[in-house]
Length: 429
Ligand SMILES: O=C(O)C1=C[C@@H](OP(=O)(O)O)[C@@H](O)[C@H](O)C1
Ligand SMILES: C=C(OP(=O)(O)O)C(=O)O
Image 1 (cartoon, helix red, strand yellow):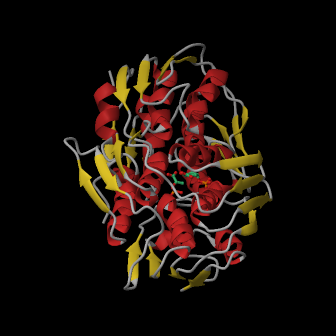
Image 2: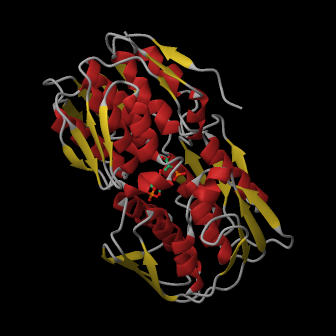
């Protein structure tokens, strides 16, 4: 069922400070690595959202014990000290969380038991074939329960042998991250070789950094070759702090660039592991004034915003925010090399083009790119969100257009940021 629409009327400015909710990407990796580790880990600044709830429920069903601390965002995870093991078949519903489906498919293939991985209908349209093909090279027993190459999956856990794995990294970096995370659990050494143009590369670097924080060594031979020793397992770091979500930061930073600011986001900065911190560099190229500190970023309006031609393959999530920011810039903006937008919560290239046109913008949708020519005056639009949190959050920037905006089903942002609209509206002036 969809939530009531929200209408944002014209706001002249935005100003203030935002403490960001935890990063979805880091939170779900931290949950999984803590669950596999030897010892207990206190996760701090945990994101409480749909995607992390799906991972937490799955781990609980796998007999991982967890307790919330004094604050709901503190969770103590008692690690299993190795692979999961269940006597009965376990069915796990993973919603539309790519960061749960892909890593769990990898780790469960090396666990002991039988597992059925299900999700929302859209999850069954998001490919996982390249990951499964790669895992079959080392002995994984994984069956597609509906269409070949897509979830739902039946996994019969077994001892994977390690060795050389070849993986096509051109559709999703999540396949690479998922396979990397299972390798320290295998008895033998492994070598992962990537083929195709590797997309969303910073998420792979994030995975490697987090594996190291949980005590596993990974040798990065090149951007296409990784070596991992077998039999290492993971060790708890004791406490692990989850950075603020850099993709969630993008909406506030773009708003400041459009409407004045200054806005400071706390929880992400120059020291962050997340690639999406570089979103602010794109805003700077468009004319905004950006200041980085180690754990915060401040943006304010600089020169009038101007469009540009950007390859945003490395930051596909924050890239969506550039598409709506482009409506406020002078000249055209082209966002390139984002083919895999089509494989996410919705076909984002098509959804974005369709909804941007409602504002009067001239939009060209290519196979892997979008070009946006802003209208002289941005029209009011009633924006469909396609059950895609980022569609809802991106289009909130139209609060700075004189006619405002109406956003349908805004609650879909609970996938990663349940109180986004309250936070956003509290900063408007
Ligand atoms: O590994 C991750 O945490 C993610 C990787 C990216 O996906 P792709 O690698 O499929 O682009 C990103 O879009 C997603 O939101 C989170
Ligand atoms: C692509 C996204 O999600 P997922 O982790 O499900 O791939 C996203 O959050 O923009």
